[in-house]
Length: 274
Image (cartoon, rainbow, N blue to C red; front, side, top):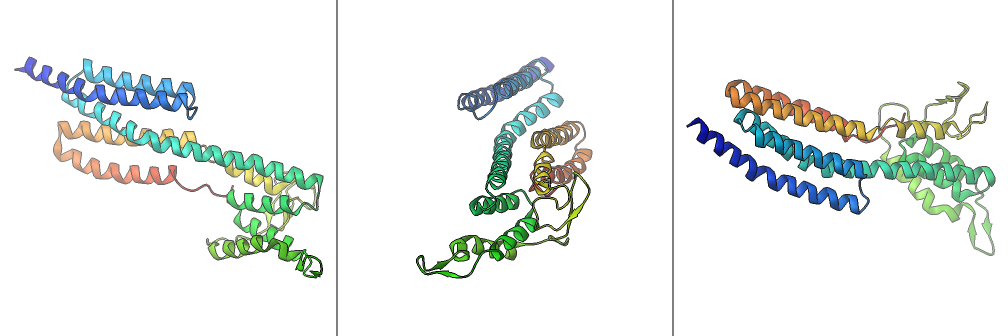
């Protein structure tokens, strides 16, 4: 009887595991060929699936089989979201490089208003909403309202779209802290008004440093690994306990859902200002 149950468990492990391993392998290969993931990630993911398949095949005890299959399912479901978040993080890193390029354009030509407004937009994207609004207001207030008889438009009127966006930013501004509070330069410690990009004492572009630190603090890959490990750890442990003791497993399940919800909220939270 025990041998028959073992064969049934082993057969279930093979029937359930092979499709998952095959699907994972095809998807990982597709993403690798398209250049969406690094080759090491593709190989690592496929080796993980093979390891889970080996555990399910050669250790077909129900107390091991169910958690193993559950971990495979969680990985398959979680990986596309992780890939999307990593892609979004990469886009934000690109915007940081664009911020540096826009600042370099301003250094070369201080009257380059297009670059100035690009800086404010990128600061806003980096979570520096108060400083972005303050800098843009300063720029607009410094433009002339005198009408050009040839263009029939003032210099400020040429940037009407930027002014409309400024009003949208102000309407969407939320938070208990003062978004326009002075900021400390990390180079010299001088306190600066948030409408200045460069420190008034050492002239370092201190607002750009805040933006870079905001991106550095994301650590998206680390957060995703923690989120995945938490999901797998809690749900697999709960499944293993439920196989052994149904009464103890249900409280663990509800507790695990709360913990996983908190961890995933942290993983997928929006980036904040450093």
